[in-house]
Structure formats: structure tokens, C-alpha cells
Length: 356
Image (cartoon, rainbow, N blue to C red; front, top):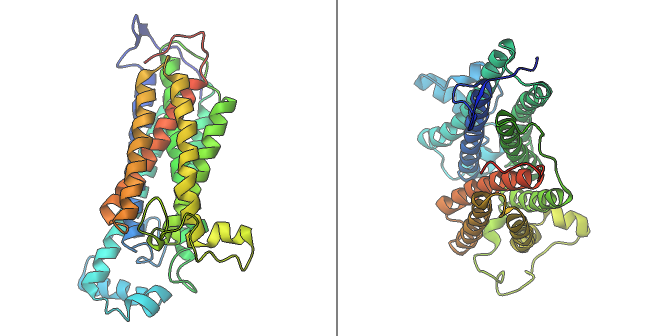
């Protein structure tokens, strides 16, 4: 993968330049990942994730095509604990099964589409030697992360097929956080390439403040994933107190504080609820730091976390309304995207003029 010197006009990137194509491609894949996060949230909230009990990366792209095929898939589902202990006694019908199967199939199909949407253009650009020097390994790493994410998805599903009635919340957190990490990496790389095309060749770096913001946000996202995996959103439908208490009753410390922090639904909900304000404080600092360089990015960060806080409160107060919960996960991905943008701006060479 060699470097090249694309032609530029006076304003920066020509609309037909190779770098412009690379940037648009990466942002399109980032958009697909954003949609994937939303569909993943729907899959989780509708308890659809265990409906497909096998991992067939190629043949699994086709859904059941006949009534006999549907009955076969339903029989496979009937062998797992979720059906035996929950949905079977509740009287699940074949039509009910088709509904949850649809969401899991869409989720997996979208994963395949994302893989192709990244891999095929990547190999094309590589064959055309259109990937700038230093970016080949970065894009290869993103391709690897995408493949790893598919494996993590099955690793997550497999945890709920034999002894549990749901998936491991640790594996669920790994799956969600990897998706959001890939989203951030796609945006970061697209921004670096955009600056390269505008003759600002130095990639952005992660500053100390940028790293601190990323770590703070990571913790908030981690506990958000725990809340989802443990169904901890249902333990309280009041705000700001939890069941009339600042610190909720019912926290199980029997196995120690560390186990409670990572496994107890009351405590994970409590941490997610109040760590949000720590996250907001750091995002405000980030947004103000970059305001002189990009007012648009600053507004994006403020808007994303503001809407996210309101959606989180509304989701709690409505007893986990599914539409609000889905929006909460979607805007969470937008918070990640806006933060990646802000941290990127923070890490640019200040001697160079901002693009925005």
C-alpha cells in the first residue's frame, strides 16, 4: 500500500480525489455501525438474541423459507433454557417465535452487510494503491476488529444457550463496547484522512484530557451495558431517588463489594445513574476547550449528552418504555461519535487552521 499525491484545488479536497472517496466510505460504514447499535438495542429489549441457536456466517444469511424450516428452527429454540423456563410456560407460539427470530436475523444480516461494506472497498482501494502511507495498517486493524466483533457476538449468544436464560452481561458489555469503539475509530480515521486531503498531514493525537474523557465515558457506557444485561432498568421507576432512597435498598454485598459493583442490578443502576453527571462534567470541559476551534463540534457534544440525560430520565420514569430505551441507546452512540470528534479536535496541531 503506497502513498500518493492527489491533486488539490485551492479549497482543499477535490470531490473526485481518492481521499474524499476514502472519507465518505469510512463515514458510511460508521453510519451502518450506528444503525447496528440501534438494531442491537431492539434485539436486546425484545429478548430476541437467543432465537437463532447456531452460528452460520455464510448459510445463516438466509432466513427460513418454508413452514417446515420455521418449525425446525422453532424446535431448536425449544431446547434452550430461555424457552424451557420462560417462553414455553408463557405459551409462546410459532408466530411469537418468528417475531424474535426476525430481529436477531436482521441484526446478524446487518453485521454481514457491514463486513462487506468495509472489506470490499478496502481491498479495492488497496489494489488501486489509493490508501495513503501509514493508513494501510490502521484500516487493516479496523477490518480485524470487525471480524472479531462477529466472533464476540456469537461468544455472547453462546453464553445463553445451555445453562442461562439470557446472555452473560459481561459478554453483552464486551459486544456493545466493541461496536462503539469501532464507531469511534472509523470517525477518527475519517477525520485524519480529511485533514490529510486538505494538506494538514499530521494525524491528531490523544491528549491527556482526551484520554480522561474517553475513560470516564467508557465507565459510563460499561455500566449502561450492565444495566441492559442485568435488566437493572426495571429495579426503579423513580428519579432522582431510587425507590424513595438515595442509595437503593436491596444491594447484595454477600460476595463482596467488587462482585456487587459488577453483578448487582440495584448497584449497577445506581452507578450508571450518578456517574452520568461525572461524564457530563468532563464532556462540558471538552466542549468548552474545543469551542474556539469548532463551535459545531462543541454544540454537537452539548446536544448529544443533553438529549441523552433527558432520555435516560424519561426511560426510568416510564418503567423502561421500549421506544425511549431504544432512543437512549441510539443517542448513546451519538455521544460516542461527538466525543470522538471533540477529542480529535483537541489533539490536532493548534498551529494548523481548523477545518470547521
